[in-house]
Length: 147
Image 1 (cartoon, rainbow, N blue to C red):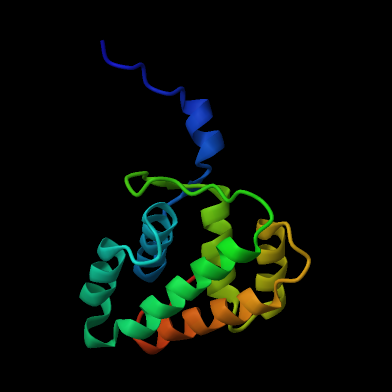
Image 2: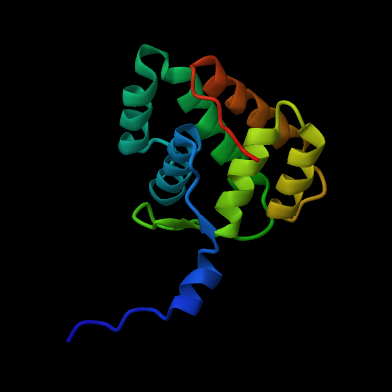
């Protein structure tokens, strides 16, 4: 007997946000999900970055790994990340994408978002990493566009 589908209200509660329209943000979301589930050295994330950035893939990949490592090391709470196959995002994934997108030009906004996400008062180090990650995407021609 096949399992019954999850009620729509539970899905929208657990995954309240649509996937980003911006391809760079989608690429970043894939990396967050893959590294969150399979570790920082996930081959699928690395191969996806190689395909997207070509020979310049190392800088964005290393900074994505640094962001995820710092997030895991400094967070004092569990951060919900959806499986790669999900067609929607958790509130935490939306917060990460938004914070990284704002980190370069609006670091105070990014700091507040990341501090709230990690349940941590000091988020300056991870904001610096997020800004470097955002700059790496932009320098490679794939800026992370957020509203």
